[in-house]
Length: 339
Image (cartoon, rainbow, N blue to C red; front, side, top):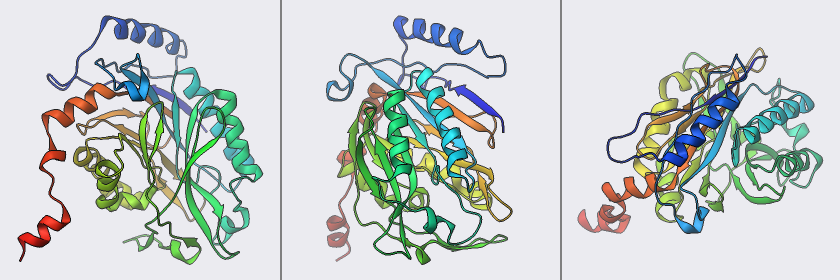
């Protein structure tokens, strides 16, 4: 299994972005440090501007990382991979690492996930909490198999852990994947998973986070609520998209969610063949509020991380130049307009 590390670069969007002497110096230092590994493809994206003081006083941007991996039916092996990725992210200066759906386990057959499901205070999740504490990095742990209300069900739970190892928030996947893939296999997530009911947002050092999981991506109203009712700045979409649906829709849906909410989107993806029956599309992405991909691994199927900066001034700039929050009509407006 190969590991690759990539620091993202993006071309400025006209007058929306700018750069500073301080950030260019930081860019040079990081590139020099990361460039010591010959197998790594490294460039650095820098941005500047005034920062929302509530989020990160004294800084204009903060670094995040998105992971890509191929989980298998081995809890210890997956933890070892995640541990390595967390250390890479911490070394790159990331304050948050996003891991994909089913980061801790992918079973070989139906029912395997129920066998490993645990409560959030169980040894599996506590191991990841320790990993966050030891590395001093926030972790987005998407798609954890949390024990459900009975032995026949689990919750597909997105857990946010802070850099002290404390669970800050949990979001349970609302939209369950009951789909017959054209040319592929059938999925019925609802047969063993309980749907969540609550939308969640949480403040962090990298902005106000809006956690979701995989199939949620196809339901834009969830992301609209995260932006306009819950004031999210960064949307998290850990996933294990199938190869067929990923080829068709993965990037375009993610970029659409970024554009229509004017949020950053961080989408950590499972990649490649987990077993003889299951294959994931891969292509972990970080997308800015203008819809530009600013973080991506060079290889869609490799295991590794991509790094980019959350620029709070860019969020403010995009929202000011394209003021959709002011122009947005409520559901009540459309009801009355149709009468």
